[in-house]
Structures are given as C-alpha cells and as structure tokens.
Length: 368
Image (cartoon, rainbow, N blue to C red):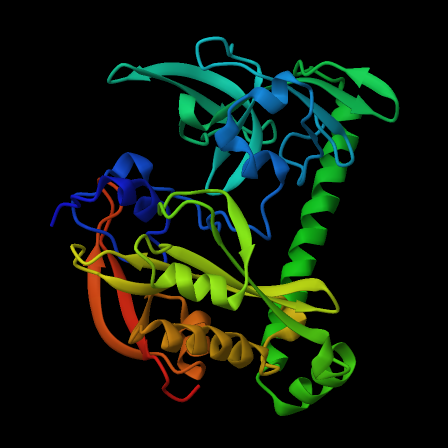
C-alpha cells in the first residue's frame, strides 16, 4: 500500500526500524544506520538547528569537537573544528564535508561527486578506511565543510598528508589502542547486561544510584509544530500535553524523559500514525535508559507515567515493532507488558533479503 500522507513520508522512513512503513514509501529517505533518530535530549546544537540553514555557520556561531577516531590523524580527539558553509556544487573532492545521517553529524572526507535524477550529491569516507564509503549525501543534509582545525592553540588545515613510515607506525599503534579500549568497553557493557537479570544487582543498583524517590523526576517534550517531521521541541506540562493530544491539531509525537538528580537518565518517545495509514495508532519508536538504571523498575515507572497520560487522552493501545534478532529488546518489552500480535516481512533496500519484523502491543491501562 502506498503512503498518501506526504508530510509523514520522510519521518516514517527515518523510523522504519521502530515502526513498520508502507510498501511504496520513498526508499531514498531510508537510513541504513542502526543509530537512533533525533531526540531532544541527545542531539547537539548544530543538529537541532540544522533546519535553520547555514545562518549559524555564516555568523561563525558553530564549532564542534569530534568523537571517535575515524578521521585520525587529521582530526584527533579534543580538536575544535570550524565549519564553513558550502553547497554540494562548491564542495571539492578532498574536502572534509559535514553532513547529517541517521540523526547524527559526521565529518568525513569527500572522495567522489555525482548526480542522480538532477540532484547533485557527494560520496564520503573516513580517513581510516581504505575501501567502501558512507553512501550519497544530498544538498538537504549538508552543512558545509571543515575549514580549519584548532589543536592546542595551533590552527591546522584539513589536507590529507602522507606521513613517513615511523609516524604511520605510531599512528597505527594509537588506533589499535583506541579500538581495543572500545572493544573492552563493549565487553564490560555485555557483562553488566548479563548480571542485571539477577535480583541482587537490582537491589545493589537501587541502593547505589537512587537514594530516594525524590531524586526521580519526569518531564515532557513535544514539537512546536504538529507536523511529524518537526525538529524543534519545547517542554510541556501534563495539562498542555493532554490539551495538545486531544486538540483540533494534535501533536503527532512526544517524549517523556526521566531525570535522576536533575541529570538525564532515559526517555520514551511516541509517534502517531494517522487513520489513513495501515499501521494507524500510537507507536513507541524510541526507548533508552542509562545502563546503570536498567532492571531497577525505572522502566516500569517511565512507562506507567506515559500509560497514565495516554489513558487520560483516550488512547487504547501502544504498538511497537522489533526486528528479528533483537532478543534483548523483545525481552525488555515483554517485561513492560507488550505482547506479540503478528509478524511481517519487509524489504528496506533493493537486492536485499526481506527483514522479519515482530509487532507487539500493549493495551492502555493493562498491568505493567
């Protein structure tokens, strides 16, 4: 079934991993990364303000520090990157382009340019990769280029250099050390996730991280505009959100966030698919809780707050979908009261095998 609601097409394509999409939705908008879509608590200033165009860049109001080591040694941790606004046609092969993909900003080197059905695009790749690429980036997702790099008071250019053997050896040594630390951290996370299934951990985590219920607070945010693909959020009170959910132009997505000691600890985000959609109704499309707080009953408290708001707004249920193989997510959702109702297969990209999706649903007011 083709989607006839054009204001939803871009947004639905971005959240296809968390909610099913129509068969003929524009596959050009589909994001191949497993990263979460935008949410108001995670994204930085540049990404939140992307829709305002290059004004902030032109006024030299935007700088940012990189994460990761994919552009090492040209760009290193703690460097400050200065961005210059550039259109696709102005970007040259060799420039470090700054673009958004999967709700994140990337700064990777341009290795090729092209045109698809009248639209110019660039192809980028991190300096540490010797093959492959990031795919095409079009005008609407490009912020500009990295014009210069500041490092310990020194201003550097962005040209890729050919270093002598000794320096390359030490650079490779640094990268191996960096990736080993990443690997070690993932193993620690896996171990913590494993022990969280035991009651002893839950008691220990509550004792160590949550001193009293007064430290646990909830806040609500929804887009300023009722459009599904709106990027700008503001904080709502319960009364304001309930009025917006049941008003003449109801909001189509909203987020409830959990704070502990005034610090972000997790959130749930929901989106409404309209009545003319084959998957109409409210969907849980983002879920995140800091590792230390998992399995401490905070998931239940967070969903219980959302459940109460949905009940007052007159909603009957919340749906969620899980891709095949996401066993941990499926187990967590079952613990929160979601039940399996159906499965379906979808093809997200040409020449790819169908992906099996499990649809789960929770009735509003049911036991959590």
